[in-house]
Amino acid sequence: MPLLTAVVLAAFFGYGAAWYVGAIEGNFALLLFMATLVTGLYWLAERFVFLPRRRAAAQVLQGQLDQRRSELAAQGITRVDESDAAATRERMLAQPWWLDWTAGLFPVILIVFLLRSFVFEPFKIPSGSMIPTLLIGDLILVNKFTYGLKAPVINKRLTAGNPVQRGDVVVFRYPPKPSVDYIKRVVGLPGDEVAYINKRISINGQPMAQTPASDFFDESSMEYFKQFNEQLGEQRHRIIVDGRRPAFVAGADEFKYKNGCAYSIEGVSCKVPEGHYFVMGDNRDNSLDSRYWGFVPDANIVGKAFFVWMNFGDLKRIGSFN
Image (cartoon, rainbow, N blue to C red; front, side, top):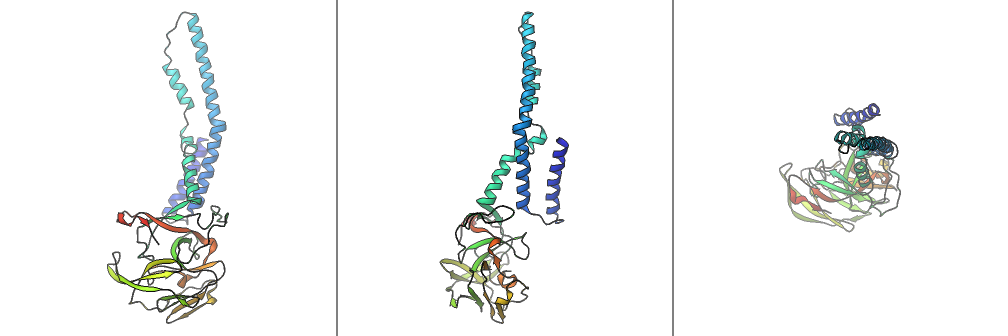
């Protein structure tokens, strides 16, 4: 078992190292699931096989000590140094290293697996596409149960949950590369006619309310941008636009249902297919979103982002957001 365990642990560390250096495309959900499964099997084996064996061996030793003590007592010897025997018994009952690194870690790994799969998942903002709502380096929490629970790894829906609302900030698996997580704001729901023309959103022919706000200074680029308060459904939030950038969407990829979109010099309009969403970043001129690569299938939705739990560069960032 020690050799087998060493091979298993080496496989896990090798997978992580190859993922870290970019040699393979890793899947953290699968890795965590496998770690939970493997350590769980070791935990069961420890509880029902290995620990009972160690206890039985310790009992045999204790029986031998009791017999020796009785024999010595019969000879009139009542003081016996049993420190070595006690140390031996403790060593016999102690978990070996290969169980410490497997069965011993199972409770912690199981808790992490359940929390990440069904409750909250941490996510780090890697880019400025959601400025001013979210800044680079924000560490956020994603609610995994609001839209219904999904089975880990296979991502099959287990419960219905609440429907995705227009204006929600969601984390989802990037459709062109599902192993990568993206974060954007939901603009269009299934069946909506979404238009982003001259940097203004209209949904089903109705322009969304947009009022000017004070200019926003982006510390990551050391530039000022025009800022607006925008209303999407019941959700009110801020956006920024770059007046130097044209409204024209340049370099849109080929994607499924693209025939439902019309591109022009003023922008783009799309009919959102059933079971899909149209998403955009709040940094409207610096966001790779549905305008460029298409719609987000409902199955790709990971959860609703709702709270900044840490930003090591600015502790004032901690708190909820819209």
